[in-house]
Length: 97
Image 1 (cartoon, rainbow, N blue to C red):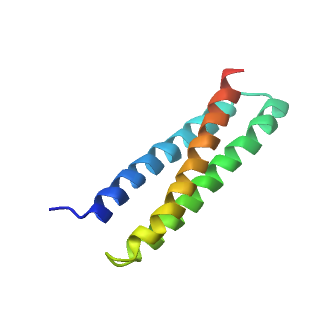
Image 2 (tube, rainbow, N blue to C red):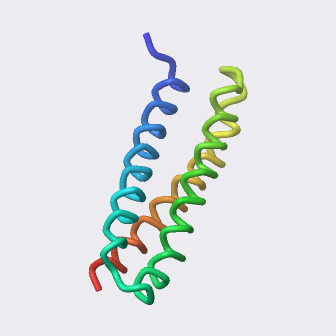
């Protein structure tokens, strides 16, 4: 049976994989934009990318924690995932404009 830690880690990793794929998708889409428009999106994409990287680091810390200690790290992972979700929302909103 999978531990709660492993199940949580898998769920978080899947969310980050989707976010990483979205970053790549958005970057590919900006290649057709004018330079000014690309600059406008770059800030939001950078925020999203940094958020994904931070969340991955937090998740790595959680993975390395023992069964007893991982719960303490869960909050920092959740905070990082929330930042990723917020940055993703901002990027999606910008692309709608």
